[in-house]
Image (cartoon, rainbow, N blue to C red; front, side, top):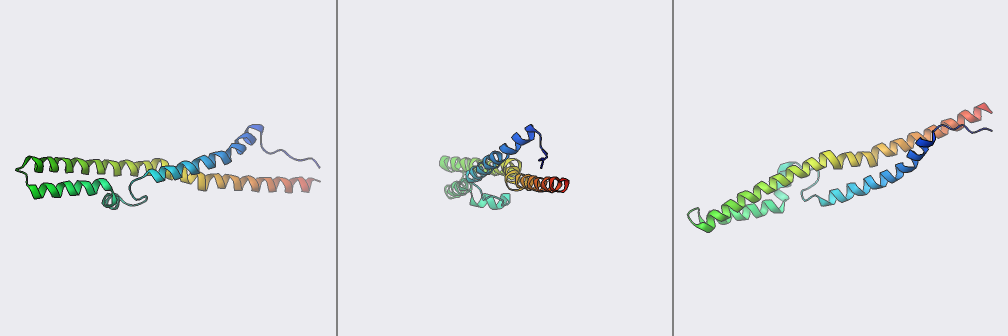
Length: 136
């Protein structure tokens, strides 16, 4: 029996690369997630409490309060504490943005979209086989 070719040569090449794209997306997602300092998926306030920068900022501010604003070291600790807190907030904002714009789309690609494409391809192959069988 004659076998029907459903996909063009270009689409066959794309199909071969699909698994590689899935692997790269999955490993990149894992590595990016490991790079996050805050708790993934948590809100900004919850991330802030767990961040080492925030803890350092609080420690500096407490030291400033103990020494008082009238001393040079107290003023310096207060300024450094405020700066560390701003750095922590920027880091949290950056990580939330990376999570939303990069990590989540990579996860969807690797774990939802590509498996869905592969499933549809298998279904198409089965339908083509059925069509060829019914022709004969």
